[in-house]
Length: 56
Ligand SMILES: [Zn+2]
Image (cartoon, rainbow, N blue to C red; front, side):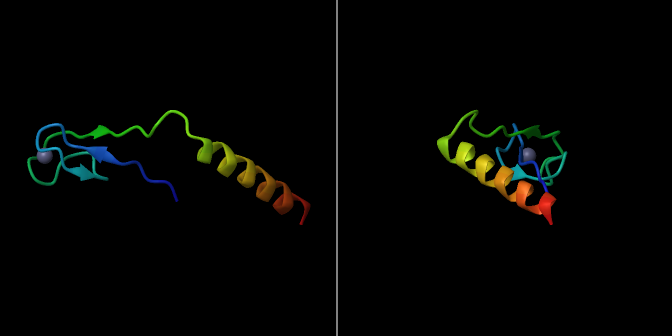
């Protein structure tokens, strides 16, 4: 399951909701770092795993 972390620009609280629970301000998506070596290896592992799954 995928979730997207959001942040309120008013009170700077992190939430998964579209609106801040505290001040009802619309929250903005928090984007993760564009590139990290770990992501690359994780993606390779995931591709390997999906290949294994497809052969079952
Ligand atoms: Zn807020």
